[in-house]
Amino acid sequence: MKLISFDLKADFAFFRKPDTNATINLSYNIIHRPAILGILGAIVGLEGHKEKGKLPQYHEVLEDIGIGIEPLNHDKGSYAKTNIKYSNTVGYANKGTNFLTEELTLINPEYRIFLLLDEKKEFHQKLGNYIQRGNAEYIPYLGKNEFSAWWNAASYREYHFSKKEIRDKSVKILTIFQKTNILKDNIEVRLPDLFNFDNTESPFIYFERLPKDFDLSLMQYDLREFAISNYQIKNAQTLENLFFVEELNAYVQLL
Image (tube, rainbow, N blue to C red; front, side, top):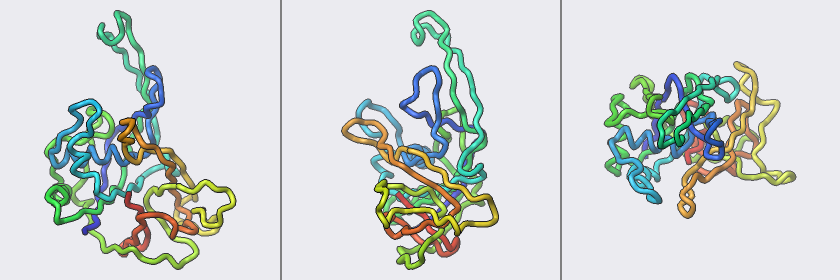
C-alpha cells in the first residue's frame, strides 16, 4: 500500500446540495468523497454516469481507495463565495418563459487529497503515476465542467504511515474526520482539546454534513457529519481508518 497526496484547486467550484431548490442552489463548502472519485476517474480515463440507477465505471473500479481531505488556504474551514445568476431561455427547460436560477459558488477552493493506493491493482498504480506526472485522460473539474481543476506535479508527495496506537490524550488530525458519536454524556466522544491548538493561526472548529458515498438502495448521497479543526482531538482512538503520517507528525482519516 502507498499513501500519496496532491493539491487540487480551481478558480471556482460548485458542489450542489441536492436538497436545495432550482431557484437558489447551495454548494457544499468542502469537496466530498463521491466528487473526488469522479475526479480520479477522469484522471485515469474511466467512464462516468451512463445509465440511470447504475453506478458509473469509475465508482466500481476506484471505490476501495482510501481518501482523506484537507482543505487548504481557507478561512477557518470556509471558502469565500459569490452568487452567480443564470438565465435559461431554452423552451423545453422553462416552457416558454425565462427561467432564472442562482448558484452560491466557491472562490479559489484548494484541497490536499490523500490517497491510499493498492499498487497491485492496475488502475491504482496508473492513478498514482498520472498524478505524479500531472497527467489526466479527461479534464477534471470541481462540480461543473466549466470549473476545470488542476494540480501541480510538484505538490505530489509520498509518505510513511502506520496504524499507530494512540496513547496521547489528544492528537492532531489534518483531514476532515467523520463525527459519528452524538451521545451527549459519552466519555469517548471525539472532542476538541480547547487548550491545545496550533498557535500559528486562530483556533477554529468547522462542521459540515457531507456525502460519504452513495446509498445504493435509493441511488442518492449517503450523508454523514464531518468536522475539521486545528485543535487537537481527544479520544481519537475511537475514529476508524485513522493513520499516523511520519513526515507530517500528524494523523489523517482515510475513508
